[in-house]
Length: 193
Image (tube, rainbow, N blue to C red; front, side, top):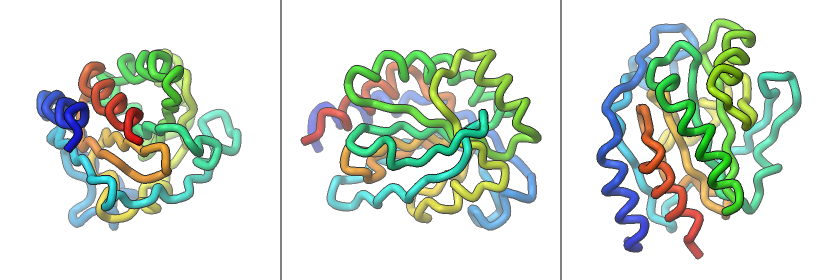
C-alpha cells in the first residue's frame, strides 16, 4: 500500500462513529434490515479490485440534468446525505470547504440527497451550509440502488471516492467525516498514477 494511502487510512480511523439510521420505506431492499447506523468505517479498495462507478443520471436539486460522465478524468467525491441527518449537518461545512480547496487538483464533489421529505428541505440545507456543488435529488434511492452491493451506501451519510479512471477507490460508512481525514484520503487517491 502506498505510504500516502496508508497515512490516509490511519487518519480515517479517527472518524467519529456516528451515523443516522432511518426507517423509511425507501430503505427496504438496500441492505438486509434497511439502513444501519454508520460506524465511520473506511473501506479502501486496492486498485485491481475497484468496481466501476455506475452511470449516475438524474436531476439535481434545481431540476437540472446531472450525469456522472461530466466528471470523467477527475477524482469524484460523492456524499450521500439527508437534511434530517445530524452527522450530515455536522460534516456539510467541511465538505463545502474541501470542494473549494481540492478543485485545483482535479477533484469534484457531488451530493446525493436521498430519503428527504421534499426538495425545499434539501435546498435549504445546501443554502444554510454553503454547499456549492450539485446534489442529485434521489428520494426513491434509485441512485443508491445502482451501486454494486460491495460499495452500496448502507448508512447515512456515506462518502464514496472515485478515482480518475472512474472506479470506486474508497467508501466511508457513517460520519461526520473530518476535513483532515477526507483531505488526506482524497489527496492520496488523486496522486495515484
